[in-house]
Image (cartoon, rainbow, N blue to C red; front, side, top):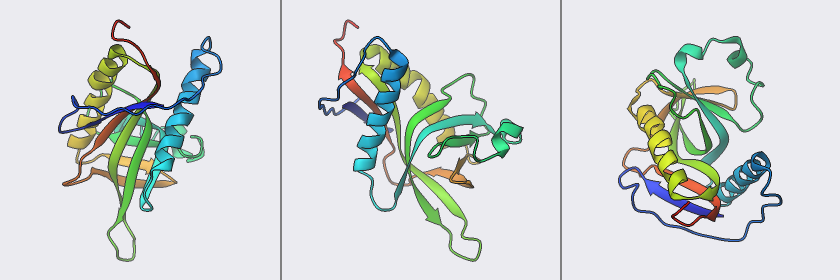
Amino acid sequence: GAFISCSEEDYHSASSKTSNLDVDDMSCPKLNGKQCELGCTEYLESRLEANEKLIGNVYVNHKSALNRPKYQDVNVFRSGSGIMWTTIERDNACSEFDGVVYKRETSGGDGEQCTAITTEIWEAKVSISPATIWDAVTKKCKSIRDLMEDEEASLSHDGRQMPLRFGSGEKLVFGIYGQSVLSPEN
């Protein structure tokens, strides 16, 4: 797949990598989207470090929805997914990230309180074009910035609710994974 990786400090600089990943039927966008998400997950899994965890399909919700019955059952979401909770009003900004890489930091002690330190957030697109890059930067980056500024943000994953932080002194990677790169006129 192709990917564009942008740090928070300078998301205008980008690197790219390509390989052949076949898309079986270009006439079925939903199927192609799922294949692309799987390709993104495989790519991220192949480069995880021992202390990192990967979550696919991470939803972003306002904490006011935390007590809704559909979020009380941890089995509601398929295995491997999670929810980032925020207290900042979202104004219909992005509601999902296709991949999130984080490290668990424990405080020690009896309770073993874990904090999720987010290091990478990914969007999967079948085709990367100026329009998909614009869409990701204007919608996804706003949600990322809101989460970073929210001292009360948390992550629900693996049956746990953990405070959500972003690496101090580390770069946050925002990546766009794609199966093909379209010409600029698209």
